Amino acid sequence: METIKSEYLDYFENYVARHPELTAEDAAIMADPWDVNEDMLLGYVLSLLI
Amino acid sequence: MSDAKRLLDERLIRIEKAVNLEKPDRIPIFALNGPEVAIDYCGRHLKSATWDLEIVRECLPIYYQDMKVDAAAAAFLRCPGMYTAIGSQNFVPNKDGFMQHPEVCGMLASEYKELIKDPFKTLVDKVLPRQYKAFDQPGGLGGLNLAKGALSYMHNSRILREIDAHCSATVGIPIISDNMIEAPFDFLADQLRSFMGISVDMHRCPELVEQACEALFPLLLRWGVTSYTGPPKKIPAIFMPLHMPSFLNPKQFERFYWPTFSRLVNSLTGMGYTVALFIEGNWSKLYDYLGSLNPNVVGIFEYGEMKTIKEKVGKTMCIMGNYPIEALKSHSTEQCIDIAKKMIAEGAPGGGYIFTTGKSILRGKGLDLEKLQAVHQYVIDHGKY
Image (tube, rainbow over all chains, first blue to last red; front, side, top):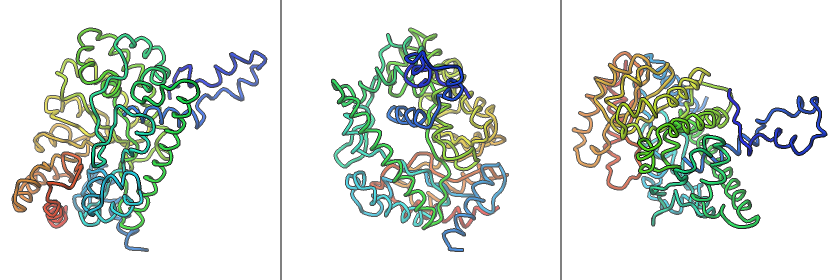
């Protein structure tokens, strides 16, 4: 499924931008931006607007 | 096995066969209503119930059992505790606790490009603070209020899911539609641009409207999947109320609504979900579009000729709805039954049909629910295949 590109949801991309010391190996471990909390956050925000 | 478990299993098989366009043992009956009518039916006060969900837990099973229904939707109740705490502009309680949805505009026309670039960020930064004034507070207070709303939302959602399970366990009612999502165009129209705003935008900036629907599509698809409990199943279906099409002309529908709506429905059914569409208003000019959706769709029709609906979409879509609830107010019991008789004769042949009302029954006041009981008893007695 498509991921959602958002400054407020792509946790790893935003985190790594502030932490240049992270390696490619770290990225492989941490790269999934869709942990359960982000899905819950998405559901909460959308539910307020439906 | 308890009576409730036996009933639950029987009803699930009945519903699944209808959704699969097969003939069940008899026509299933679906309760198209929120908890509000059950609270009225049991003589309880709605305002108290919206603040104390234990009252809903007490009333819903009684209503389902007395109305002799086979299935229901997940309990959905807007709780004023959450909406008032976060300063809601888009959902406000009236004097007796029923939540009203005024016409609201959460996004300016000049903000389309921001929405297209990063829809989630724009919803959080621009739309939420306009629709929920408590989020627009200085310092950490806005964030604290956002968290307060989230905690309340999760708390209420958990209790409502427990009430659904309680209805299944005590009176054998399966929940056949689960989470609710919207078509991208409806999401854009309802609370971002408003009914009036989107009507102007389709003329002034049509390309931006198309691009906004495309930008919102991944969020709504993701939400449909991630808010569903467990892996994809036929039952419960993902519920999608369709708001704007009956206000669009066919050209507008084809250009703005259909592309992302049909892709959303076909994506979900392709993954193994069933999608239940609440087809609001008169779609008689649009039946061919509905008939071209992939299978595994249930259509709950508000209006229309049942015979035409069956001919146009019945080969791929399980049909529900269409019973006029106005009849329960103004017609005799015999006349109410006659309407059901005609509807069954046109909708039921060959299977793929579930009996229910064309509109969600919101409140008990003014409706004679004894007539609805009589109509449902007629369907039970005469709806055998």
